[in-house]
Length: 603
Image (cartoon, rainbow, N blue to C red):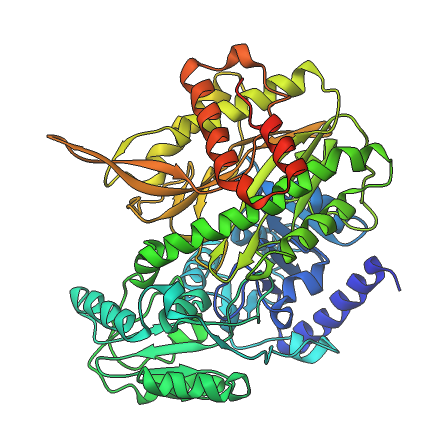
């Protein structure tokens, strides 16, 4: 049975459940009970019902129609994956695109002559896989759209998803203190101190990377993210980890006992909230799912979790780990780049084969654990698909011409990497060279920025975009995101993006610098390094901060239109390349060193 036929049968089965439950529509978000960006297969309901596998999107099904909302990263991919199904693509943040509530209001309001309402105006959503704030917002929006109501206590997938993957039971491991820099007890003390500032006696932690960071534990339950499915309940005196006990090795059980952390079953977290005895509890409505939120019986402190802010500022040990991991990752990248062009000239390489080659080189490095996200290897027009992932059907053969956009990263036990290089495989057009140069200039404008302490990423975002804006170009994704320390490659609370994100940048934070330009059907360019926020100077106007590049890898010089660079930009690039050579060359053989020397020579 084809994928299209599968989707048709699944929609038919879903509608039968909706009919029995008297629902007019059902909503499938892309999240799980822990509001993660990447989710275990068990909770990939939106992908299962629609066939769209992007990391962000919401599918909505009525008795007679279906639609999927996603952002600009996935417009092209979504169109391809939804082709032949009932699903209509709804492009977020594009003028004329209705919200989910508006669309449902139109779909469920009338059937003929604007007089007869749909059979049911009740909309369903699984309250366990949607944050409390999102559900509350959706309830209000649906009410405004003709009095639609929302039901949150049904998961129809339990009835129609045969062979549904189970919740993972992978073992948990201890993250060494020498790499974490702070013990679990120290972190719990810091969290409790922050809770007191918010006048809260405790909190429920649902975010998996926050739990892993707090407890100095790691897992493998989520693709690319070294986390494990669990909840953590903290009060003034104790902490309880709600987890499948099959995941706990004897060493981890002993460790948790030593750190003063109790253990209970994953399914008993609701009971844990009922048994919570403190006066009040902080529950981050953006993090905790609606079903659990509704189980809280104590007064709720509606505040953001303090953990992301603590986690984002890296310890000295974590910063040292990043430096070590970047050297190993840089060595793998150099070996790969030296191999790439001669391999392409043989005519045997494709987008997927170069991905496998790079992953194998990284896997040969010490402390490698996994990739930090699925590699984006987009050749020519595929490079214009921001979050493109090659499949056997789309896998393009590489030719010794044009541009290859390669966005990749790795999870090492002492650090997480995220790097993008756009590589000239041979002759380029003048348009490609100009776009490449302006993206490089955008990258360098942010890299070289000096800014006052307390500034947020939104205030910095325009600095990078200025260089592409003045050419009439733009990109719709963010310019930068935080990076975890052997944790999630996308980490908050800080971001560098056009949308307002108030979290200030602080020394010790990591953040990417990744402007890009994408010309649909032609090519895309993105250049990305991971940076460390550092102190720069202090004047009568206060503390000023700057960025230190952590990523160690040559930036392809061959596409650069040098005359378009300022003297400052040219000198910085030369200094960066000199540093790359000095730090990586001791780990390379003679031929690799000669190649790297040629790639890092001054322009």
